[in-house]
Length: 155
Image (tube, rainbow, N blue to C red; front, side, top):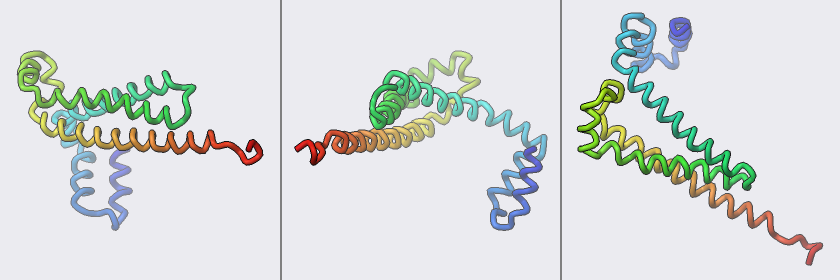
């Protein structure tokens, strides 16, 4: 299936370039695909679990505030992810904690040598969640102002 996609992508002359050439080489040849997943597979699984954890935290906040106005739900969704990521940003730079993680079995699953890269990516995600959280509160205030304005017939 991936090789069929690679052939279709190679037919597009617009998108031919270095990225697509390395992508075809990496995913269309079985031996390089196995090598890639052996080297990078644990990192991809960790990222997918991290994203799933963020979405689960956001879904819990959505569940708790299901009856709230719509922008409150959005603000709580991003606020819950903001809480999780503000706590998770510290794990990448705690030296004693990283040394302890290297002694247990989890170090074979999580790549602990790219901790600063993880720290930076979490910081970007905190910035995105913070901006979305703030915008949701702003939209909630504007929504409330339009929702409670008296009609001219009531005056």
